[in-house]
Image: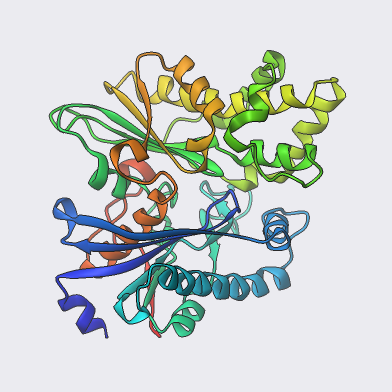
Length: 395
């Protein structure tokens, strides 16, 4: 099986992404030819399969110190792997693609906890990360080889294990004449700055902070569980940003840290969002003002990250947004106001689905693994050297 994969001139790969937003599983079936800068990509089909509310809320609890336990983590490692396997099979059926025609599955897994910086006070808390969704379960259920657990190899060579998307961003979006920032807005926001190919300097990448994570939790609680997100940013559009609360949020130490840096639910998840919401309600803010302020928080952290760490070093003409946040019109308008010298686009406008982009990127990471090609970006993660990320499970 491995010999066959290695000898093929092209691969059909199902890339799986389940991010910090915990909204569901994205599956992109991608036809890939070549390697490195000569990689050619064709998206064959994409599906986004939502988690049911019970699974979403259980995952949120697993991502908190207060409510997680080893039995739940152990069980969910297998339960979500079964869900990943089903998602690939369902997507292949929807695309009228036989599972026999899929060569490989490449999965991000579901991040439960991420420690990008070692705890100096506890030798048992080194840099580390945990993504669940057991690779062997997916392989046995689908009958396909599975590559996953990409982040750990980067941490093993001194990196923070994130962001991983710069590898694919560079392959898909580098322009000869224009500097670009690729901004993904999932649960967490992450950016990749790509100087024009003709310019000096390398890429810069880091997590900008919360993407949809705080907004979604606030909307969920304010709507008493009836809504999981602010569709199109319509609720935020009705409100007014509370500048005092926004300033308090922007004072968080994470935003003063220089890259490389990464974050996640352990810092900005349910515990953070719920506590902030209590504070906002105690001050008597209208619900629409609370949602507007949470939305502005994401916009300002993105723009400030650029202004502090990218724009002084790199000429940027375009910001290309992907992920669920690309559908939030209020958020995009806020970004446009904060970044008047850059055009704000979505990746759809360049022919790459904003929803499918990260799943495509994981297909690319899987292809690089099979090709024996380093697929981390040390400038983004802080790793000591390029290395091959991923582990393989056979059916």
